[in-house]
Image (cartoon, rainbow, N blue to C red):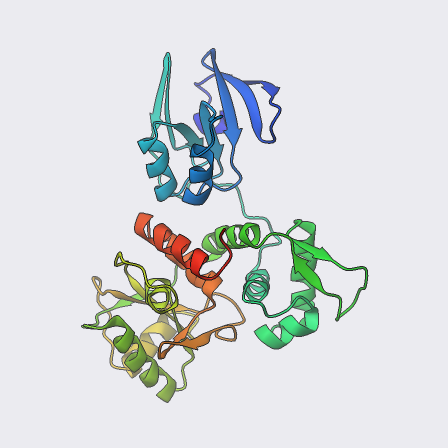
Amino acid sequence: MADALGARVDVRVREAGDQRGRFTATIQSVPVEVEWLGVGWPRQVRELLDRPDRPDLVVAPEFSPGARKLLNQARMSWIDLTAAANIGLPGLLIIVESERGTRMPRANLGWTAGALSVCEGLLVGAGGTVAELVDATGLAPSTVATALKFLHGEHLLTAEAARGRNARRTVVDRDQLLDTYAAAAARLRSPESIRVGVLWRSPARGAHELGSRLEANGVAWATTGALAADVLAPYLTEVDPWEIYVDGGSLAELRQIAREVGLEEASGGRLLLRPFPTPAKDALSAEVGGQRVAAWPRVFSDLRMIGVRGEEAAEHLRERMGTGE
């Protein structure tokens, strides 16, 4: 917290509270009851705001746009590790604007594209053994085993006494795994993408027709974000841009794929073409509503990156897929 506020602001932690993550601090000599949230998303903020014992100040690694909006509406003081803050307490006013993603701690080195694939497999119910996850994702057994060991070390999985290829892991808390996975997926997502122009009156039909052309050219594909959510868990609010993953790892390959299916790159285009984000590619995708749809945890993560409306659509997707309460 002191690092986030900067050297010119005096911050001192006085004592830990009775509750986990709760402590008392002084900011510029003002006593403050503080609570740490491991995840700063609307779901966690709503749970905090529903409690009668609200702290004076809430802190998280990063508050999403939707979470910031909820906190500001509730006049709750907050600060995160991107150095953004909105603190309004007696004798103390600190407002700092910060771009999302700046000054964030480095991602845990155990989070790799392979680990993300394994998380997706676990969340869609592919099984908890190395053999089952290899079959579901197409990853090498060593990659799956390493990912399971890492996730177990992060206390996201439990394991039975047996070891080896058929030792089964069980998810401790599906919501916790989803939230942790989604945060890591956002940090690791490649910025590589191109925008193309489309004139789709019906996004679902347009995606189906484009998918048919991609398949005819031997290109694997899967919708994600708003396009996928529209068939997995339709939401009343329209969310864009539309996004499709394709089997192309570089900008040059993405542009070649676009040309081959008759798409033109356009700076204001509504459709984004992205390379598959993990080595599993489309192995965990499914046919839904006439289109190839990415694994729903990936759709959830990508929706959250769109903004406040995307976060709302993501939480709706969570509820529809049965991980929420």
